[in-house]
Image (cartoon, rainbow over all chains, first blue to last red; front, side):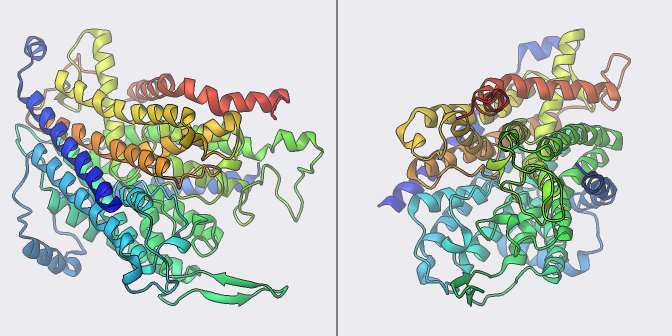
Length: 39
Length: 575
C-alpha cells in the first residue's frame, strides 16, 4: 500500500511538471505587446 | 596555512585551466555529431541503441518535446530505482542479506540519484546490495549527468541557432553524452583508482580480527566503478557512508586531487564548449573567469578560517601548534591523510560543483566556513556546478545581468546576439525563484514542525544550520550532508525528495523554454549600443548580480544560522 502511495506521489509530480511545461509553451505562443513595442 | 597547502590549491586550479580547452573542444565535436576518435569503438554500440530503441537522432525536437522526453525518461528512472531497492532481497549479489529499503527512504534515494543530487539518508554499505549500487545508483549517475549536459547543450543551441524551431534530439544527446564523454573518462578513472588501491570486487565483506582481538567486518564491493562516475557526474553519492573520507574511496593524497579534477573537469569544459558553439570562445572564458573568482574567494576563505583553528578550543589551552604528529588548525572532523588544505579544497569543490562528495565532516567546520559552503550552494551552483546544471544556471544569471544593464541604459537587452524579451525574463525568474522557494519554505516548515525538530542533533543556531544545509543541498541538487541531522525519517525523506524534484525539473523546464524561444530568433547585429559581454566590465557586473541576488535571497537565513553562531563563538557566549 505504501509503495503505491509513493509511486503515486511521483506520478502526480510529473503530471504537474508536464502541465507546467504546457503552460510555458502557451505563454511563448502569446505575442507580447511590450516586446513588439521594443522591436 | 602552509606553502604546500596553497601549492595544492594552485596545482589543482592549473590542472582545471589546462583541461578546459581540449575537453571543451572535444565536447563541442561530440554534441555537433562530428566524427571523433572514439567513434570506431563506441559507434556500433550507439547505432545498436538507436536501432533497439527506435530512435532517429537526426530528427530534432522542439523545446517542448525535448522537455517532455526528459520528464518521462526520469519519471521512469525513479520508478525503476525505487522498485530495485524494494526488490533487493530477492535479487542477486546481496551477500549481506540486506532487507528491502523502506518505502520513504527508497523514494528519497530514487529521486536523489535521478535528479543528480545524491542526497543519502542511508549508509551505502549497510543499506544497498551490490545489485542496487551497480544497476541503480551507478546507472542513474551516468544518466542524470548526461541529461544535465543535454539540457545545457540544448540551451546553447538556442543561443547559437537562428530561426530554428528545434533544439536537438534529447535521446541522441543523452546517448552521445554517456558513450563518448562519461564512459571513456570513467573507464580511465576506474583503472587509476584500482591501481591506487580502491576495491573493485563482487566478493562479500571480510571478517577481520583486530590487533586487540576484536571482531570487525570490513565492507568492500564494486567501489571503483561507482567512485569514478560519482565524481565525474557531479553526483557525489558514496559507496560507503563515510564517502570520500573512507580509505577505500579515496586512499591517497594523489587520488584526492585527481578526484577533485574529475569533479570540476566537465563543468569547466562546458564553458569552453559554450564559447565554441556560439562562435566566440571569449564568452566562455568570461563565464569561467566569474566562476574562478567565486571559487578563489571561497577556497581562500575556507582554508584561512580552518587553518586558524577553533577559538573555543584555543581558549581551553588546547595545543594548536604544528608538530610531526599534528597539523595546525581545526582538525575536528577532518581526515589526517588530507589535512586542512586537502579538506578545505575538497569541501569548496564539492559544494561549488554540485557534486556533494565529502572527505571531511562539514558539520565540524567553523561556523563561517559552514556559511561559505552554504553560500556556494545558494548561488544556484554557478561556480562550475554539475555537468550542465552549473552552466545553465550561470547563463540564467547572464540573462538577468543583461536585463538589469538594459534597464539602466534604456535598451532592449541582448546576450550573445539574441534579444532577451519578456518571455525569457519570465522564464529566467521562474527558474531562479523555485530553488530559494523550496529551500527557504521547507526550512521554515522543518524549523517549527515537531517532525523536523526531531531530526536535529544540536540546539540553537547550529541546529538551524543543519536544517538549512539539508534543504539547500537538496534543492540545489548538491547532495552533501552537514551531518548532525538525522534525515532518515518519513518527514525528511519526503520533503527533501520534493526539494530535489523542484530544484531539478522546475528549473529545467523554463531553461528549455528559453532555449526554444531564443532559437526561433534571428541573430541581432552587434552595434555601438550593445553591452559587450566578453569584457572585464561584464565579469564584474555578473559577479555583482550573482552576489547581490544570492545575498539578498539568503542573507536572513544565514544570519540565523552560521553568522549568529560565529558571533557567539567570538563573544564567548556559545553554550
